[in-house]
Length: 122
Image (cartoon, rainbow, N blue to C red; front, top):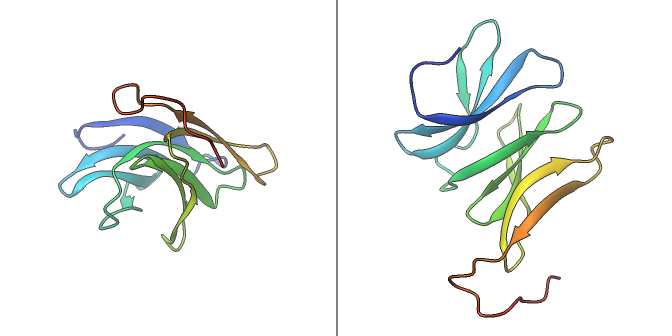
């Protein structure tokens, strides 16, 4: 459904009208949303300096949580406004929304090559 580019983690929006892909773009690893009918891409993280790792649509389809640069962020799909929502001393990954969209569950992974002991999580 997309041009031949390196990408991973395709995710359908809750309404099925679009899908998100973490894609290697010319500026870095970005989060793109494609219209299912038009297949026209919108880069939601271009110019942010964030290297996107993985993502999850909110149940309402208006936001996408994603991990980048060791933290969890949320982007508003309409405005492309990005907010930092979690940044523990660990490597924060794999966001997942609660069914009602009120909270985000994520993994905080210790990098064994950089951390000698488990730091406190706020």
